Length: 223
Image 1 (cartoon, rainbow, N blue to C red):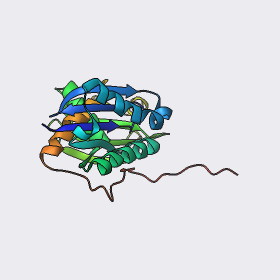
Image 2: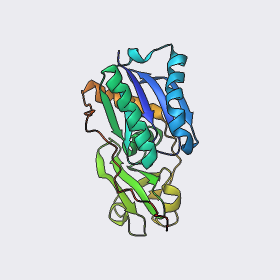
Image 3: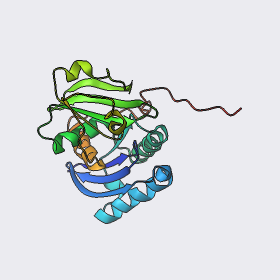
Image 4: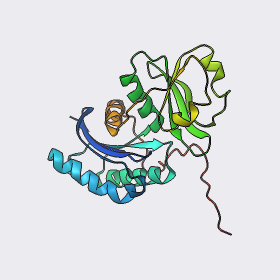
């Protein structure tokens, strides 16, 4: 009976859930992105209290490994690795965009291609593409959105764009084959995918694991 702690701090809304065999037992969420670092450990304690479990009951810890917020990814990965080191249990890292695409598949059963998008500032997004069987068509990448961004695919297939990056893409991507539905993604979907990885022993090495930032971090230098 695999009991997995799932941590998602990759996007604007952070979430922690405890899941047994992929079934969510409890979820705690926080929509204030700047508070994720101070919020995370109390949230873990809260889901354990809700379910009556202790840290030593866990069989693994899963985390969204990127792409997403640089700070959020570091916060989530550091916490997940810390729990795994202390408890001697495996770490599972899942692609953030795959979790979003999985949520899209569950909520959009008639979709042809699923294209989750995370806002990456200006006109850039983190994006990927999956078919209805969750087979990747486009690997996770950082992309500047313009009118030609998805022309080749949209000429042949219907694509559902969703996520925080889809709002700014909608006025630019003009095609009858493009739709922009609302998809609600939460850490419970990570709970399902992490259990599938657990069954296949698809674990992430603790020593060298780090977030998949997808693009280099940069910041402004004060003059």
